Image (cartoon, rainbow, N blue to C red; front, side, top):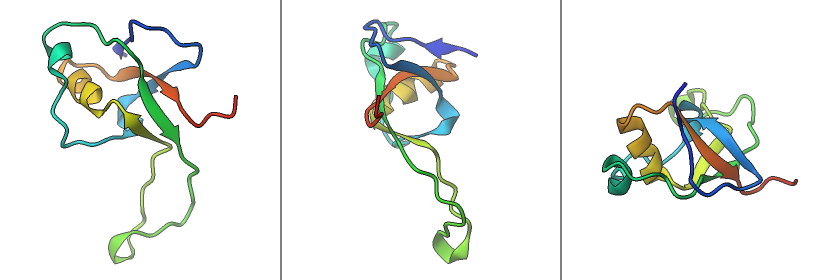
Length: 96
């Protein structure tokens, strides 16, 4: 497990497995991270309610992920290129 950590700490920071996140895959990786700079802020994610038996196109089962990235898709792309499997983030819609 290789974690990309943020420089600025937040009390609600959590570690997320990148493969469990929905993010924009067409975004270009953040150049600053690829050039060796540290990640300044944790990514921001939204927690979703998972519905069972949800169908997608052609009646296929729709596979939902519990979290989607609100801000930070470029950081995720850079993390993947650098070999990270996990990234620090904050859940925006947490009740706590």
